[in-house]
Picture 1 (cartoon, rainbow, N blue to C red):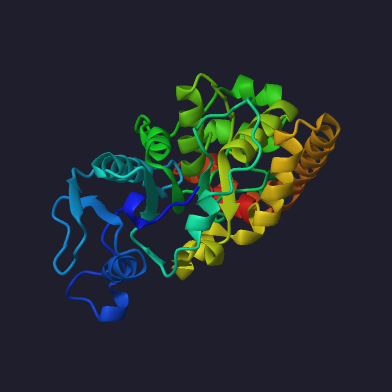
Picture 2: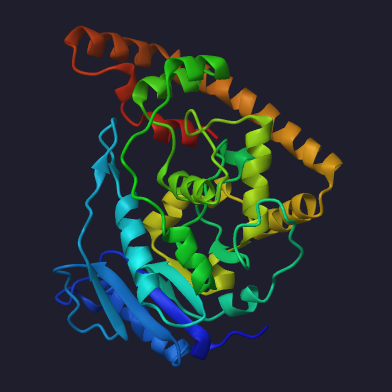
Length: 350
């Protein structure tokens, strides 16, 4: 299978990075469109952004101006933009017309077409949790490895390439209604210290988890996470099989992708599946090697259990946190669920 520019649509989605009045080095979206014209001159270029966006000087084939669905704010005060990503990705893909597509953010740049060769690396797949016609090629950033990060169902959404219909299937999901927690009883059944706190916080998943869990639900595979770091043996198997069977994970240098430093910092490659990890994962799960799968799940669960109790000791029982929690309770302004940077500090421990 050979894919070239004539069969490819490149959808650039999100807020235009660098207005026309900004210095040239800050106009990332304009520079990316120019790069694509040079690297893949026959490709269709679609820019999917917001009504009122500054598109002066930009030259895509199609500009889609969407109504901004806005962001919602988590209980901790942090902004969640998942609905913006869903709308701009979905509408951009709907406007595309080629058999294959790329979905990439407006704050990234393409500098070569290495991702095209990866589209041909289909490899063996199993029938269980086979959700797309072909695997989608994705950048490793944000594809969290549960052994390194204790997060399941956390896919990468920075760059994705594959069949246009598969990508549209992935992004044609309901908008997020906001924080969705589970009951304290659910958390107690998990016997997990973080689960108890996140249940109070009314927070069960991150943006990338919402996207993948929504696709699974659409395909008739409902999955319940009590909190973002929830894990059981069955959940680990579902998460890893669904990712191994439906994605090819590659590094940005393989894809030809340049990421902004902020994306690289938040994406934290040390917590993600590497391309080598994905190859091993694919061999284990897609070949149905039950002994190897059992060993992998056992390793992940041991690590997960240790990290939960480490988190409890270092964060929840830290004297400074106890004093701050007491002070906030006396002031009546904040609860344990709103301790500053609560979720960020958990992930930084791993």
